[in-house]
Amino acid sequence: MLKVVVVEDEEFVRKGIVLTVDWTSLGCAIAGEASDGKAGLELIHKVNPDIIIIDIKMPYMNGIELLTKLREEGNQVKAVILTAYSDFSYAQQAVKLGAADYLLKPFHDDELEAVIKRITASLSKNEADTEDEKSKEILAGIEKANVAAKQSKYVEATINYICEHYSDPNTTILTISEAVKLSKGHLSHTFKNETGCTIADYLTKYRMHKAMELLRDCRNRVGEVAEAVGYHDFAYFSYTFKKIVGLSPSEFQSK
Image (cartoon, rainbow, N blue to C red):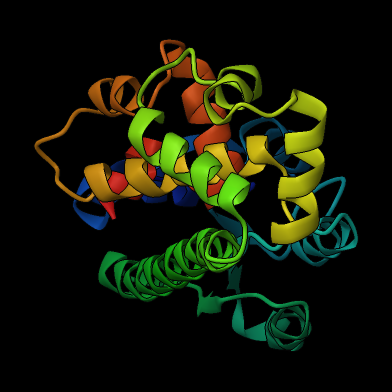
């Protein structure tokens, strides 16, 4: 579910957006609402939404100031601007600030839903592209090491060991060095020098590559996948997966 925050000082309009739109059918959920720009900014910092719906004219901080502040912070959240005809020039400013779309008041629920659908489709495409790029990066790193393995018996032995024992949580540089009969320091230096990555990095990327393969089958539960690739600590697996892939395991699987 994508998180949505509504920042609108007119309670009737705000409650209408929150309560009358079928957010679940749009793949979204309301993460919070605020009645002025300052409170809206604090809420956005707190819940880190995917989409924000903000009015132009509000107390303490108007919609343009709010969006400007977010962009200065590097926050590229998708923004839908609400504006009256008399404030249309402000909507143009919002577009320059990277607003995804704007709606002229008064608007109907189906107009807002159409805008949200366009945004969710765009976000899904971006996540799919990110997933594909991350997968390619991981595979490229693995392939580079595999090429080096053809020229070094120790690198080849290391990779073969990882391929056979990645599911064992006790697989470490020490167990690998003992298996290939080379000192830990010498093996680490040789592997890094010939592949460009450390043994630990290769092991992690190989595990994430296997996890991605397993997660593509929705019948596999995330906890089972973590165990299958050598992680007893589910939280650490999720942290590592998101750090490398850019999505949490459950997000990756749902896409």
